[in-house]
Image 1 (cartoon, rainbow, N blue to C red):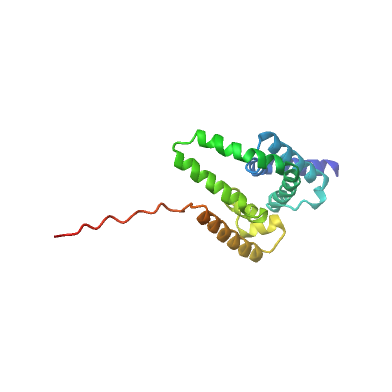
Image 2: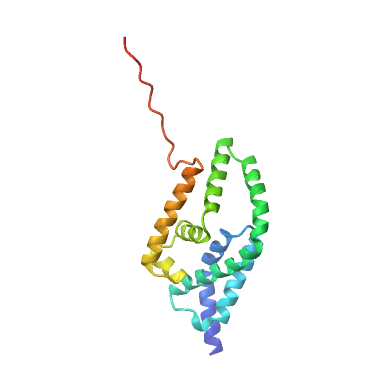
Length: 182
């Protein structure tokens, strides 16, 4: 039985390590933090192997575990992130192509950070992880319809936050001046 358990864990680990690592890297401030989150995620998976669903559902289950591990991690890192966020934006502005692009990137980042945690998580699962509504529902333990409704609302809130920050999704062209004819 222990050999079967170990073989299953190793198979799941090989199949999902890259996805779970990418998930953690995109949500952590440092590679070390991401490595800690991944290690803790697979530690939980090992301890709870009996609860690990078969097949593709294992990946979604691991996303849910990683999300919980990240929530615990973020509770402790919240203050540090707030202090370093302003410095990170300033450093990014130093290395941008133009001042306008840095300002817009800062505005987008601030708008995104202004969203509730649940909105940021839903938008990230779609944009960064490429999950569809059903996969998100499985990972978060909710219905597909609830995901659809919450994602719609999150997108509206993000759009509103971007508008309030003066960020436009498409550059707007000014109409050509009309010349008067004499």
